[in-house]
Length: 94
Ligand SMILES: [Zn+2]
Image (cartoon, rainbow, N blue to C red):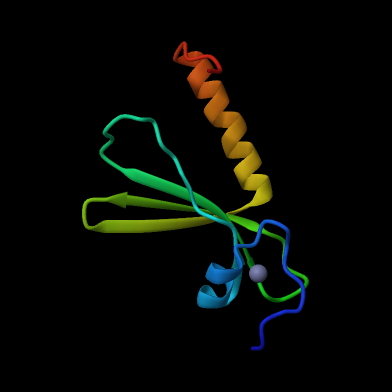
């Protein structure tokens, strides 16, 4: 498949060419503390024009790497549920 002529504004062109899918720069879920897992999130979108963007969550725990790809709707619901859980734990917005 040839690279597309147009890319989303969030697309990292170097990574797009390498992975043959639109992909945003990786955002590290950084707490400024040592954590047992390392988490990264990014937007991805296959080069097919009719596909919506998705959110990729990559979790690294020691030698194990797992990736979860979710729809934008699932990502929105997850963000909402995480806010609820943080509020229940007494952790407000910072
Ligand atoms: Zn792209």
